[in-house]
Image (cartoon, rainbow, N blue to C red; front, side, top):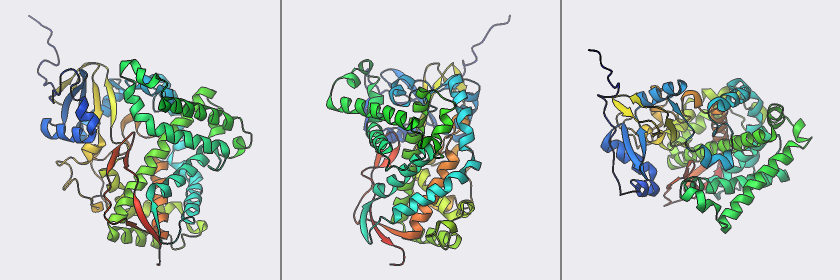
Length: 450
């Protein structure tokens, strides 16, 4: 007699901490999500389960399982919409926050502008803005790394997206508002799940300031979109405006500016931290850059083709992003009961993919918590043991531009300036929308040759 058998009958249920009654693991995650994720992987394995207010999430840490997730995502088993409503007030329906067919259409619209072949258009802007910022650094000065790096990245993003410098009044307003929104984004995203988002709606000074910043972002983008000079300036805004409504344009430009600024700036900051901490590594990078760009003060002597030849600098960047990936975690919704490895994943649960955890997995990396750029020097990790730009169909759209930008900025900074950490300073991680150094990187900076 033929009987139907449940295909998941012999699969295991992922294990994990029970936490506290009702709230489960919320306190541990709120205290430090990366410590929590690392701890449950160590205790419960490469697919570990935990709850928040009874809602099930599964941390997936092994490269093979991560590859399976990205493959199944293309078939519709996994999606990315759980936080759509919570993130809507800032990202709207931009590429980061859209799903389904809407996401597919947007990806096709934007992809041509971020192909690797397009980098040559933006390289001179990156060089010009970096050299300009280097000239502002006083001799033998103490400076916070974020005050050196952030203006460069903001200027580059303004020119690529809007075709204008950040000194423009509209872009000044936009940058200031974006910084405020960026600071409050994580807490407001979490707050959207408590009491139906009531805490975010109360007329507190912080909420009112946040609402005002969002209105400033909308009005600044609208003003720039209507500016005829900007529309002739060579940025992406006029090209995108031909294909999008004003609402779509606002959502897309906000998403691109936010993502391009925060991820690249913090990747550069963490690399500067390691260069300052390890002078021998900094000297080796400087020698490599000077060999390829012997006259780096003159923009005409700086060639984009040399970027990929900077093998050691790129190894240092990769190792910094292994230890401190700016995008330290992402998620996927489980749309149907499914199998992952030897485990059953239940419909309507979440998958958490943490590159931070995988990048420090002791089965994948020797001495995983140590900084060692030689791991990447002429070597390539297998599969998703290293994936700072994500993977699958949602792999970072601006990955090629980001890689060129990060490498070029660091190459020029090291060619012109020496960096030392302030004595006795300990840098702490700040787990924010991206992973960043708390309070920046206090540095002593001096011109090369001193």
